[in-house]
Length: 142
Image (cartoon, rainbow, N blue to C red):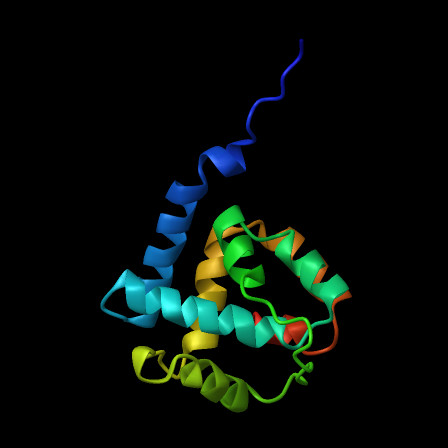
């Protein structure tokens, strides 16, 4: 009987996520990885609500497993899509996520983008972003 080995991305998922979340914490100047997690979750949700399901799945496929899970978790498919707007408006949306439990800096989107780019295949990410609606690529610029 032939068996398939577990793909390395799944074997390493926790280690890779730990590296990513520490990068996000350090880039943003937050004190804890818990604070960074809330920021990352808020940024991913702010991006997701601007995509239709098909585009969101294309994007999710370039994410490491744990980030992919965070990106799709608790997704309300009935939620209306938001337009890509200015970085300031989208940052306010990120900062409003979870209210008092969120201390994301004004640089949150760029900080998460920088951490993401350190931890994924940037060429693959940019190829996918080029296929998404206008504004998607700018969202993930550092």
